[in-house]
Image (cartoon, rainbow, N blue to C red):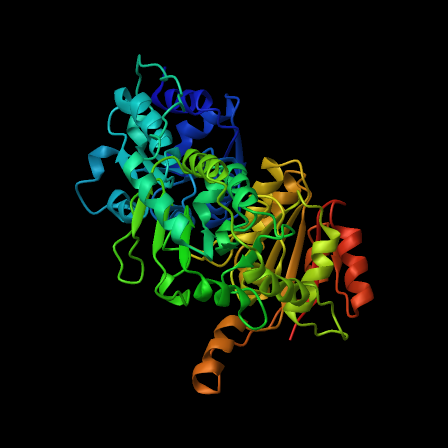
Amino acid sequence: MKASDLLVACLEREGVEHVFGLPGEEMEDLLFSLRDSDVTFVPTRHEQGAAFMADVHGRLTGEAGVCLATLGPGATNLLTGVADAHLDKSPLVAITAQGSLERLHQESHQAIDVLNMFRPVTKWNTQLDSPDIIHESVRKAFKVAEYEKPGATHLELPEDVAAEETSMQPLPARSDTRFAAPNAEALNRVEALLSDAERPLIIAGNGAVRTRAAGPLQALVDVTDLPVVSTYMGKGAVPDDDPHSLMTLDSGAEGEAASAIAEADLVITVGYDIAEHDPADWGQGDAPLIHIDSEPAEVYEAYTPEVELVADIGRTLEVLADWCSAAKLGFDPDWYADLRASIVTDVQREPSGEAPFTLRDTLPLLREAMAPEDVLISDVGSHKMAIAQNFPTYKPNTCIISNGLASMGIAVPGGLAADLAVDANVVAATGDGGFLMNAAEIETATRLGAEYTIIVFNDDDYGLISEKQMNHTGEHFGTGLTNPDLPTFAESFGIDGYRPTTPEELKDAFDAAIGNGMSLIEVPVA
């Protein structure tokens, strides 16, 4: 078969259903191979949107999302979304076209060193410089991307190679790689530390959700009455309506979650990635630290574990839960009960006045309008901080926050990917800054018949930067914006647009929009 046909056959063997990307001259063979396959090619309006779609697909499913771009500017535009997947530990396979091999040794139209450009933001990448290596390279790209800790990989397909013939066939896709059980000596040390502790606390990170370890984590918490504080990307690892949940690291009007960490005499991190949240900001005292993860801890003076349990996260938690149960080891929840009660009271506030609303006060109404299994995709900005700290999350992978690279512009394309990946309702929450970065993907969404709700928190400003400048200097500069009439903008795409100005209108807009087709709600915020 032709090399491009082999590549697409390999994608089919990997179970790929959608490839997100932009067409390009140098990928002509690959595009027609996709046309004749069971894989759906989704033409997007910008390569960054395509990469964000693949990124969110990977986060939600655990299976690598695939994005596609041509050489030169196509590849450079793809880079931000690939980097986002890399730092968020989301499995993604990026494919970029390249000019013919015969012209890459010299200065050439649109030709840049894409391979080396992608290398720092991928786990592995290679050029497909022969049709006979495609079957192995595609299998490796998916295996490496999906293997814990997951991330991005990249394949470059030169134009002339794509058109060549090959007799190779796709390799079988296998996902039976398993991590070892926890080390017995390390477990003994952890058990000793737990036996001596009076106020242990768990910090649940991205890995607790990513590795589907929420069930074993819940079992451990139920047996021991340990409190759980989540990172922004660990939201939902333990439901926030569970009495053991202290929500996220920054939750509580008076920093109650941080207070709990400071009061703890033992801190256990589960699937924590330093890129999520700097441990120097935890406010941790002198309590010893236990690291439970699939990889050793990063070397950092603010994060020096007493014991590292490097193994399958879920199996490790199951072993600990069994031991704690047999040892009848439990802890008095009274030491953190008042802190939890204060956090719950804080997150249940509702809007007290008309628009412009505060970001914080709109979230109880949004939570009420969404079912526990509905998925919220948060963009980056002031609203991300409010959502991370104050939006209760009841199931894993139902509040998607980018907090590794933390790139603006992910919500609108991410909402499309989520709509394709899950059966639940999807809400994409964004600020006016992030919204207009990838608003053109609304056209992609309507073309595909997607049905999700976009909420734009509009303050005519890069609000988070203004806030930080004000805190540092008492003034702000370079952050002001002007925006189009957003409901009219939405209607130009053929979708419903809302602009509520009272709490009653806000509630009605959420209820009318969520789960009822494609729509946009502009929420004026101060």
